[in-house]
Length: 308
Image (cartoon, rainbow, N blue to C red; front, side):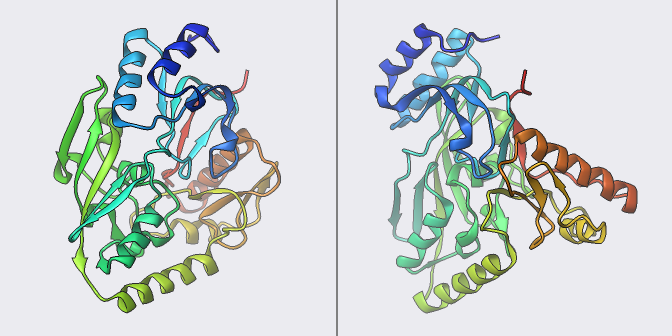
């Protein structure tokens, strides 16, 4: 097991990136949408692709556990926290437009990318105007909403592999499927995404985005911390409808609650622990299985260690 707060590792990380980008013993509930999670031994926010490569190489060379957190919008960190290095790419957030191509670094919010496309009257990313995750996270899970998904518009990506090598990959090499990709299996870290867009009319694009924003704000419990939609859509069913028909809306374990506004969401209603949140997920899965014989598969990722 990695020794927490190793001074040697701390000094090595500060040589790779600016000292202010390296935090030791950092609480992760400050960095997740659910406001859940224990401490990271080291929380690192690099500023360049080379820094990311060097951190990956350091992790491999020294045998230090390594976790990519993203912006924590579709992830639950357990109360025991995460050992080793936790990497956040939020400082890599540049978005540029080249003709009908939109190039976004992985730490940029996918919502911001959709609005950048609107400003340049490019159509194709309207569906993403309400997805809270980062660009890298959107590729990681092939994020989608309202009939659109990342694979519809992604042309290529720049990634770092598990050995620290920089790779330029066409979209078809990422095996993008419903809410999944080969990015986690390959151990890739997404640094940049290149989207192929089409020219459109500003008013038409904005009207679609306004409509989707209204639908999202009126139906989703955005007033509370959450991990977004908890479960994938089971074949032939809707997860939210199954949960609603199981009479689970309002069900609460500790500070975690099945949303009264949208049954597919679990919210951090009152200073919930990650353990309470995860226990409620399991309760919902068990109840729906018992009532309808349907297995609800999690869309949200659960990482980290149980509390001691």
